[in-house]
Amino acid sequence: MVWKVFDYDQENTINGSQALAPYGDGACLALSMKWCALRKRRASSLKYENSVSTELQKQEIAAWMNTVQDAVLQDLALNNGFKYSDLQGIPISSVDNTKGKINNMRAYANRLEKMSQWARTQGMSLLDDKVGFSNNMQAAAWTSELTNAAFRLSAPPVLGVIGLSGADEGHAFAYEYTRDGGYDRISFFDPNYGEYRGTSLVEFTHWLLQHVVSHYSDLDEHWWVVQFR
Image (tube, rainbow, N blue to C red; front, side, top):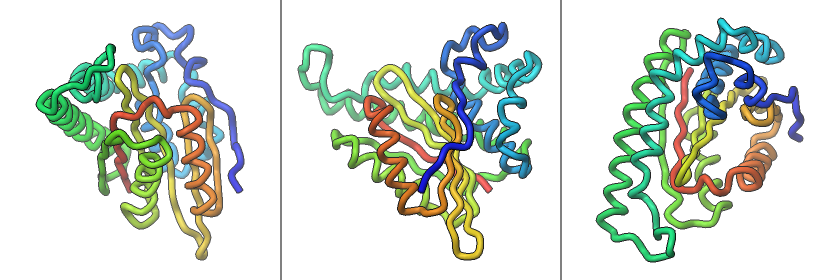
């Protein structure tokens, strides 16, 4: 069983904020890392919205985005090489395809370093990471690989951030996976929808697959998982 803990829409945090105005709806990575930091402190996730509500708090998010989120924008800018066809449907050469993958990995390494540095300031340490490409697979197939990496890459307890990248945009989520007395405990935060929880890893990974396929199947060029503890 998967249930919703609270609703959240990052547009409500961004709208009316002078500090976040330049970022449009692109605060998902910063907001996801903020959620992880809150969970690391064992604070109630229900306090999350209060932690990103004042303009001073939003300035903190904007400052973090200036150093980390820029790597995401760089990632998207360099991502042009990793496509299977152009707008006219003509296949792109394997050389350009490979060049795009290399550029993506450079941007990913840059972003990973900055995420790790920030995490240390919040009492977290980098545990593991993995990146994958859709390789022209159907959404359900690459999403299955993603969920497998998120929940089987390292043994719990784990705090993690999941990133998806498409041709022109990307998105990030956060999650926490623990085990208590032999039972799974999963919390998942999507900055566009809110927080969800589950007590069965099998049921939750099935739900997450459906969530990604339903809302983000177009972000299908590559994905990544970064785990902290």
